[in-house]
Image 1: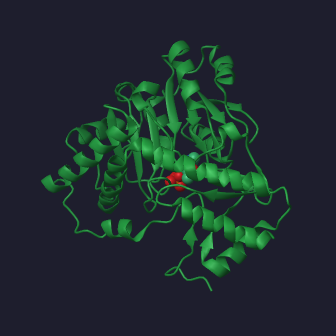
Image 2: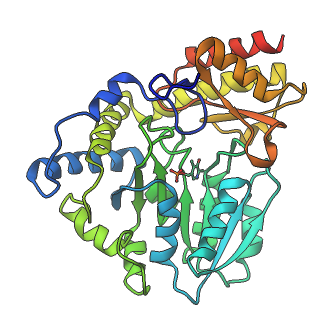
Length: 362
Ligand SMILES: *Cc1c(COP(=O)(O)O)cnc(C)c1O
């Protein structure tokens, strides 16, 4: 019987399990969001995020899920007569392209097959036309477990298209994989906290360039809730535009403190070790869905080459161990399955889960 008070341990690629010590941090006494105590909390979190993301530009804390920033980046930084190039390689990047349209902006897509990477060469061919003001990129495509070569893409963009604004969805990548925001020359990057930050859902962290905030000044009808200009004014006072989800920010403080103390390079390495392990297991028993050099370090999408009944295996592991992993996303439902290895999930836990799957598949 399902019981929300005793849920399964989550190895799905979001939300992921949150450890008890982290949960406790969300239960601290609340603060007045215009009071000094709040500004102190906000300032400390923003300073840590600047270190973790290698930026001295804006850090915004958004009381929204990550999808809010899909919309915010477009509504703030793209004028109605401009054209966006949306790169698409799976369900989440496809969705962002639709959101650009929903925001009333012009969009063209650069599509590759699910499981394929978006390469600098493909982007270069598109941008050479000179008609795009901005590009949307996905760091880690959670539907396919693919990590795009965003450092190579960014290097090419900086050299050849420095005026094109760069918006990056790093929802399932941030913290688990490197982001040197200023060096990469990006304008907006964001991640909801229910992925590699290891927090409950409903909150998003973003880094935004000064250039993006400047651009927002000339873009009409940005709306109120996601207005970067208002956000920047508030951030300068270590505040947010509206009352934020303060418990989330307390949780973020706890998590960011851990990441800073561990050293962010070590955090990335820890995720890579989990990725290496999971890929090794997957290759032994099945196949990887994407090419190994583009495989994500925060989740693995495994090709169901043995024709197992994915739903049955998930149900069996759930029944015996109160733990779940994920079926494939959308059109990949039975053809793949996904295991998350990010946030506070440990290598030992991933190993244990793979062992449980082994018991089911024989
Ligand atoms: C989970 C996810 C999203 C959606 O995030 P929400 O917080 O649910 O809005 C967007 N993009 C990627 C890559 C994701 O993994």
